[in-house]
Image 1 (cartoon, rainbow, N blue to C red):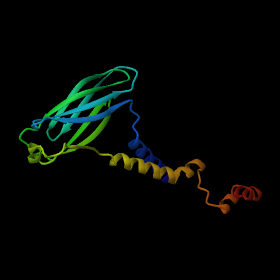
Image 2: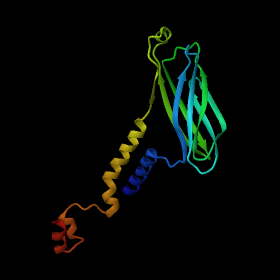
Image 3: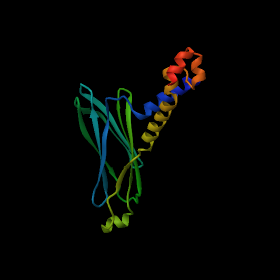
Image 4: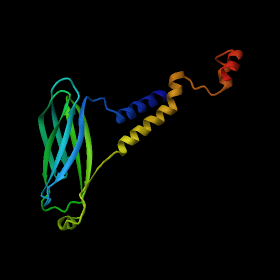
Length: 183
C-alpha cells in the first residue's frame, strides 16, 4: 500500500516537471509605451504537431482578461499573439499575468510577474526598465521532489525488496554465492 502511494506521488511529481504536450507557450514578453499608457504583451505559441491547429489563448491579470479564440498556428511552427492592456492613471508597482493556451482540453499555463519602479522615477527618466521575472520555483520544486523519490525508491522498485546486507542475501542465495557476491 505504501509503495502504491509513493508511486502515485512520483507520478504527480513527474507530471509537474514535464508535461507531455506537443504545444505550449514558448515565450512571453512585454513592451511598455513611453508615457505608460499601455502595456503590450506578446505570447509566442509553439505547435510541434504535424498539422495546423487552432488554439484558445487567454491572458488574465488585475487589468482584465483578454482571449483570442481560434488562434491559428501552422504545423511545426510558432506564432506571436499580441495583447494590449491600458494602464493609464494607475500607480502600478507589480502586475501579475497568467497566460494560457488550450487545445482539446489540454492547457499550458505560464505565470509572469512584472515589477515597475515608482511612477515618479519613470516620468523623470531616471528609473530603469521594468524587470521580467518568471516563477521558476514551481518547476525547481517539481524536479527536486522527483529526484528525491527516484533516489529513495528506485532500488526497491527494481529489486522489489531492498537488499540491506550479507544477512539478507543469505535468505536468497547459497553461502558460496554470498561470499562471491560480497567481494
